[in-house]
Image (cartoon, rainbow over all chains, first blue to last red; front, side):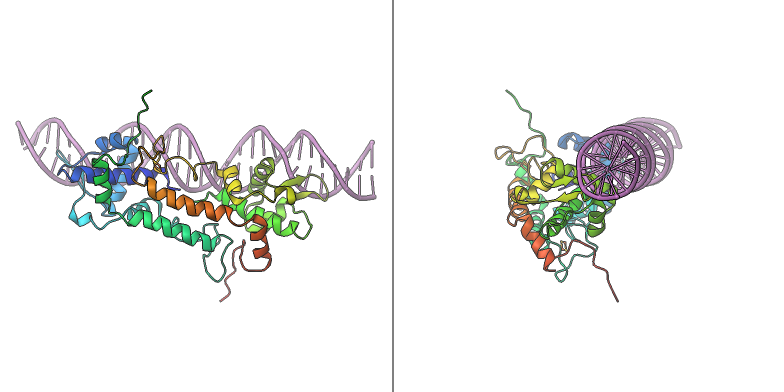
Length: 148
Length: 148
DNA sequence: AACATATAGGATGATTTTGTCCTAAATATA
DNA sequence: TATATTTAGGACAAAATCATCCTATATGTT
Ligand code: FES
Ligand code: FES
């Protein structure tokens, strides 16, 4: 459903918000560790998010990534779009050259419903809100270590 | 959402049904042409569908692929599973090692809703039924040629 | 039996995605 | 100004996906 890159992007931006809500910037290394993702690859993805103005970044000592009010209206849909492009949200899901109501593929009208739910999932809660849930411990962005 | 392979698989099996409803088997070459997919790659996917008993195949002159009553209870979900595996339907969509209600990721409860729709899309109509719609011209499995 | 046709399957190659590594640029601090 | 730190970005490598090609196997026809 989501590429590895966008999975990392989603977890990373939520993590950045959890830290920004406590007024601290985070580095690529810390982010990679916090979301169980390879550091260098994560850094690439953070670049994309920064270029797309979904997060901010500052170089040098005490630098890092952060999110603030200027990013508050961005959604996870913007994140997925920045990393994976539009394909999940538009175009024919069976790869026909054109998605249209007039010449639909066999899945067209059902895909519309799936995409509606997908859209809801990626836009109804703000990223900040998702971060608060993580802070409260209601949800996780890191592997659960199974203890027997 | 779907890999190229499963897009081809879905279109191929629907096409096979359209032909089987008219009592004729189809070869890999004809299938590739009918769904705008590369012939050799399509042949590989047809092998997978055949091995999974989602379609039948016969070698030699007058051979080809077909579907009959013995395949009538198979769904597009079986097709996607045979080609892409379970990942679209189970496991954590953000890549956590475990998907659970007790330790959910930020998208967990919303993903459940998306998957519900996805499941509906891939199981509510029989493949035969989808083939009938194609025969009637209500839906398409081939690129639409744009004439200006 | 010989031959032609069509699927099965292995080997290989191209492309995309995923991931690593190194250097450049920016910036805080001493 | 020199140095250390951290993001930016290019080059490269590994793995997965997408795609092609060739040979084996099965089977119908002559
Ligand atoms: S035509 Fe295939 S999804 Fe719209
Ligand atoms: S825990 Fe992520 S989808 Fe269930």
